[in-house]
Image 1 (tube, rainbow, N blue to C red):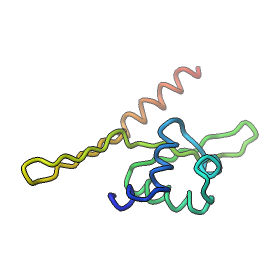
Image 2: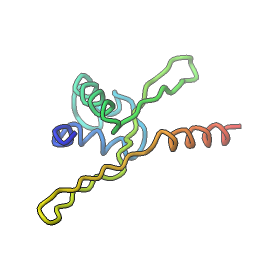
Image 3: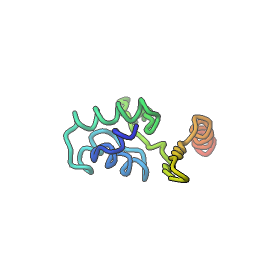
Image 4: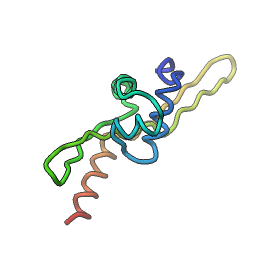
Length: 107
């Protein structure tokens, strides 16, 4: 995970998706990288549960996948010669709650 977070492209994608969910094409434009690079980094971020994808249905029947950062906090602490690493991500339960709220508000 640290190697992934050391990657400039991965960090850019995490930062962009922390503001709002975005599609790969939108991320490519905003982060100024190729779509193939976006997809490679998103796959790696998703495998570490730092980014989640969801399908956004469009009114014309097409579906678009958008990505959202789940990384809330990363802290590294050095204390008495040992490192403590804490990673806080948005939980699946929280995503469910958000989805339910969106559904309820849409009624």
